[in-house]
Length: 349
Ligand SMILES: O=C(O)CCC(=O)C(=O)O
Ligand SMILES: [Fe+2]
Image (cartoon, rainbow, N blue to C red):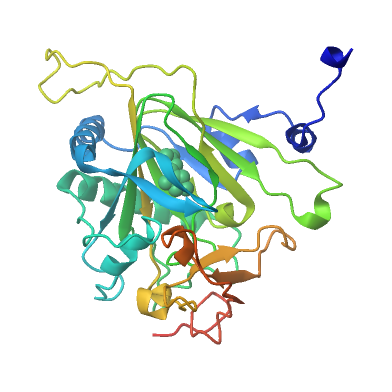
């Protein structure tokens, strides 16, 4: 009887290549299984609450990202916004302002907002934690930021913020565009408000597909936690905030009007990713495609050797805004020829 026959969908074949998901409920498990570290209660509790409410208020003007995917316009299932510090924190370069539009998938935007005071306060604490963690790392990668004058300091010169209103709002599996971050970036991701699951899944290199399966790791991110995606996370893993059928409402420990104020519990999660846009990937250095638009940088995730991705390419991204129509331009990135300063090359000015 046809009703009893097993459906043979492509989706099923695909999921057979994956192991069942694994819950990583502690910072120790996260560090053991992924290129991330999880830091609980990262900010003073009052500051975490002040920042949450400042961002909830600000999110009233945020937008859903829109872009062309094949022949239709898609919209991000969350609100998003982009912030930039005045300079890149290394030089006095202010050209970062231009890079903001590529947060919005190539849409021309107003100059980005600067960090509000609560974000600035949080950022200083987070920069210290990130630098401390980076100093502890044993592995380095040849194309990662080599620092300037021997100082490999990580600076959060930009930040992107998302607001997820309720369990249906999400972000699909992706790895972050490397256009201004360069290879092997470190990204520090602050979670505020209701707890959501952060999913990470390794992209299995093509030559290992028959020998091992992809594992999804689910990491619950509570209010006031910091997830650091260390170097190689964007090259090896994709990440997402999947939709959830049920979420806990967030009751702030320090509501804005004082502990006795009547404040409705919130179903929102605010995420702020603090990012370091590298001086050697400044906007003027980004190759343009035949459409005359800056390209985006992607790693070749499927062809990695000994966990190191050595191939990245610049590809046309004009189609994301231009009715889906771009050019076929792509070229392999060459750090040395392009005058960029990885650990293996001598730093350029
Ligand atoms: O909300 C999060 O934790 C992740 C957001 C994210 O991956 C992104 O905006 O690129
Ligand atoms: Fe991301």
